[in-house]
Amino acid sequence: MVQRPNGGGRSAVAPRPRQSSSRPSAAPRTGQRAPELQRYGTITRMPIGLDASTCKQSVQALNQTLADAITIRDLYKKAHWQVAGHTFYQLHLLFDKHYEEQDGLVDQIAERIQLLGGISLAMGADIAEETRIPRPPRGREEVPVQISRLLEAHELILTQAREAAGAADEAGDDGTNDLLVSNVIRTNEMQVWFTSEHLVDVPLVEADEDDGE
Ligand SMILES: [Fe+2]
Image (cartoon, rainbow, N blue to C red):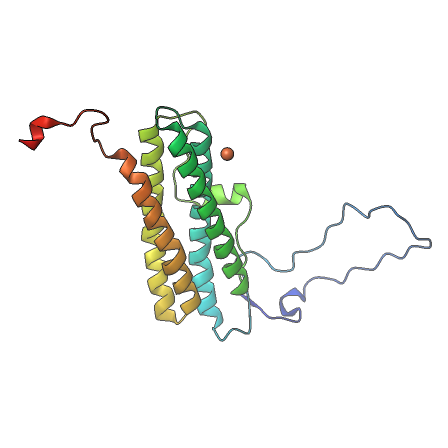
């Protein structure tokens, strides 16, 4: 359903009577509620030269990217806090760097969804319902397990982002294609490199001489 500007999608909502107060008050008027301006899943037509079906397709794809980006962002913060072992300091810093980069992507994706006339997912409970990244246990896990989970999450994101980028390109939504390729895909690929090198089993102190001869 497409909601048009000027309240086209709000006709079923009765206007609220304004409360009139006989005397001014310094009390905050809390506890207010009102009908939603726009229901989730609908598209508000925006004057950006894209038709509603293209915007809807991009918004649906970007909300999946968003749910998975928020989840991997939080997975990085969990790893940042809970990492253990002799690589603690470098991984503690690296995981937080990746958290910050994913947080930047989250904002860019969510704001693109809004400018396309859609509604971005936001709350943790909704993200948990929509993400395809498996939920880790609350407890603390070994570094190889932390990194394995992160790499599997990256691969899910990269596969979906490439499909969404291709679909946006075919539909003429260059901005969505550019965001997915230039930001989401490139950032996730770089993070895979920096993270996966920690799972390469190389000698720490003594070279493995047998294999060199
Ligand atoms: Fe920290």
